Image 1 (cartoon, rainbow, N blue to C red):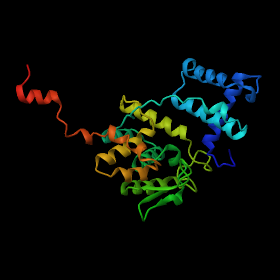
Image 2: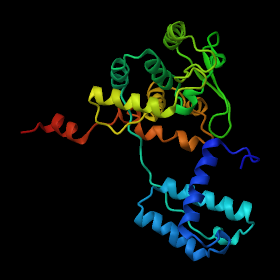
Image 3: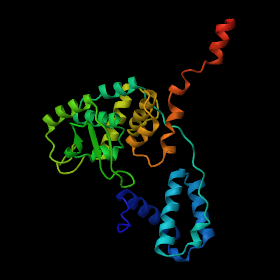
Image 4: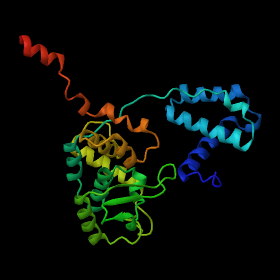
Length: 273
């Protein structure tokens, strides 16, 4: 997997899946496991363990790597069907809710990082790995290096965010990573910023099911509602396919603003008692 330049996260995920798979069938060697037994194992994950569709697909990907790439046995895994993906729309924070979350945070480092995630549409892993040299203050851009899919891209740097970063830099004086961890040598942990976000949401009393990643969803939705072309949003987010970006057309209120609710229309025409 390293020779194929798989990401650290993919390698970690595949190894975790295969470890669970091998332990389940111990002491039988994976080469000797039959196709029907693999299907029963996947059904066990779906029905007994109640695992999500994404987790099942990750397990199938790991098994495909094991049997096709490593063992060169394609027939054993090719006939296994993938579970149908659930079509869920993300919860979106309003701009007022976003501001209330930021205002509930006192720590300058945490507030600056979360504001950067929202203002640039970043994934959490991208934000914590930004280095000082990735901030282009002249062109008002942020260089995101080797993100998901091993791709580089540029995204927005707002004027307000630039001033906030200057204030943050003056106080913390980071050396390499913009948001250093406690030891000053590595970046801040993703989990720690998720915990900060959760506490901030709890403080504000927001009841929506949201995570740090919701800030990225909200960034894209607010751009779309502000009139930004979907193709530009796709580039800013680093999506390979426009279909991924099109999800925001389903959560944007812009497409629904001209629709007159039938109840409102009935009230206007005939009144209501």
